[in-house]
Image: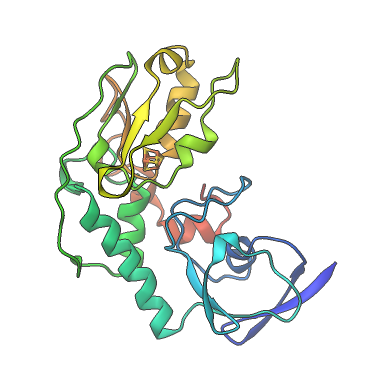
Length: 234
Ligand code: SF4
C-alpha cells in the first residue's frame, strides 16, 4: 500500500512496511548503518542508525514505515547520538586503522569518516582478546569485533545450516568464536563472503590479508554514503 512519511520535513511516498533505512536512502537521505544487511532480517545491535521517530529515538534499521511517520535524521541531538555510538565502538575495541588488513574496506572506519569522528569522547578500553587461528582458512582478530552479530546470524554451514560463528560470555568479557571444523568445510567463496560480511577487520582470510591494494579498496573508490545512496551498500 502506498503511504507518505516525512523525513526531515520532506514528504516521501513509499510502500508500507519497508525498512526505514532503505526508504531514506532511496529518498537521498543517508543514515549510517553497521549491523544492517540489506535484504536480511534487522539485528538492531549497533544503534549507529539512530533517528527520531515522532520525537522518540529508534534504530532506523528496525523500523518498518507506516503512513504519517515523522522522521528526523538531520537533527542535532540524534546526529550527535550516532556519532557517540560510533565513538563508543572505537573505544571498546582496538581499531588501529593504518595497520589493519581491512583499512579502506572497513565499514566502521568509513562510517567514522561520515559522522566526522576525530577521536572518541570515551575512554579507550584496549581490550586483550587473543586471536583465534584454529581454522585453516580464517583467523579472528577478536579485539576488533563490534559484536554486530552479522556473522553469527548470516554465515551458516551449507550442509547443516548450523552457525559457524558465535559469541561467548557477556558484557566486557564477550568474545567472538568460530567452529573450526565447520569453518574448514567452508568453500573459498563462502570464506570471502564471511570476510565481507564483517563490517570491521575481525574475520580475515589467511594468506590473502592485503590482497586488495591500498588505494583501490571499496571505500577509497566510493564513500559508504555514496554506496548506500546508490543502493550498493551491503
Ligand atoms: S566478527 Fe565481525 S561480523 Fe562477527 S560479530 Fe564481530 S564484527 Fe560482527
